[in-house]
Image 1: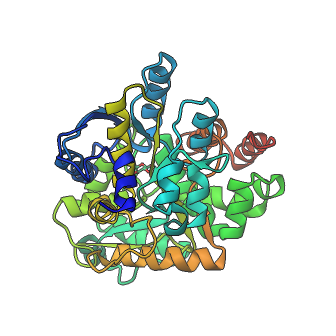
Image 2: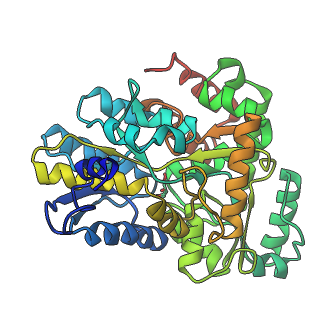
Image 3: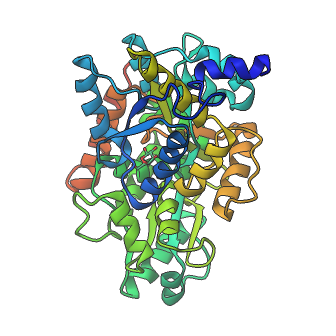
Amino acid sequence: MSFQSSLRCLWAGAALCAGASLWAGEVEVLHYWTSGGEAKSVVELKGMMAQRGHTWRDFTVTGGGGQNAMAVLKQRVLVGNAPAAANIKGPAIQEWAELNVLTSLDAMASFERWDEVLPKVVADQMKYKGRYVAVPVNVHRVNWLWANSAVLKKAGVAALPKTYDEFFAAADKIKAAGFVAVAHGGQDWQDFTVFESVVLGVGGPAFYDKALVKLDRAALNSDEMKKSLEVFRRIKAYTDDKSLGRDWNVTTEMVINGKAGFQFMGDWAKGEFLAAGQTPGKDFTCSAAPGTDKAYTFNVDSFAMFQLKGWEAQKAQGYLAYLLMGKDFQEKFNLRKGSIPVRLGMPMDKFDECAKTSSKDFVATSASGTLVPSVAHGMALSSSQQATMRTVVSEFWNNDKLTVAETLSKLLAVSAPKQK
Ligand code: GAL
């Protein structure tokens, strides 16, 4: 056995080098991937762990966007019963690492050269004080507009809207043809998902960065932000009145089934279209949300690894981390999840046109400085700032009596110096 493969055995639970069941352990994994497309993606991962004799225990907390999952995780960690891994993203990784409950993956990361195979912006988020404590599995693009091709055709919408003027003209036609123009769910993170795409489209990526990422007071109080709120509110008139509490995937189903024309959502929605047997470019389309085709809001799913007692558990956890960064997993998982591999240099030939566009645009926007973190999906702000922003925006969406001016001043109140 070469020196390299001996070293790999150390963290890959020795299963790479010895019999599959030797030193096998159990991994308990917290996630919230329960919709049709998401569940299919998780099955890939479970299968790969099982091939090496490891047992997978689901710690599933339903609720898109993961807010419920994070609340339950806190309770578990507080009583000293952390899972092996949890789907934790963005600055929240730092918050957990500060509590000294995460394990260092640095030996594996340096041996497997994660720094070389990951985009720097992603690698930095996975590290605490320069050491890897989490493993990224994908890149989701958030600023998409999904459309049902047949609905658009019946409504006489010939082209996908590139501006908000075009969008509202198309939405009018869809509404007049008897469909719901915009499918929208009823949770604050879904409201913010639409809102951030509107801010990006109305103000552009530099403005988005200033206002929503840096929480710059002048930007938060600007005409662009005022216009963004106005456009956001205008979209509401095109949604149906049953959205309250509706999950994102049930909302996507409205587009899949031809009840609705459009949905603003990240590309986990594509996982639902695919799971329903639909084909991009034929049954449905993916296009950048109006005004955002030269920009990209990224959302990277990642697993933070918790400190564990017990050698078997640690080995199974090590193997999970190793697997997640592997080419095989990154391809199979992302083909179902709707996202693209986060690992650089992966072949994209098996992926569909939406994923190919996403991959090309990720590289292009990264070079042009128009790649921005999704605020709705926990890539930019501390958990508390994010929660406050979500509440303000959601209240505005849900209460038509709240004025733009009132909401601007509430947003300004969030702009206290960033917590580290
Ligand atoms: C996102 C997450 C995705 C998807 C979505 C709906 O925040 O990154 O993987 O699960 O929420 O739950």
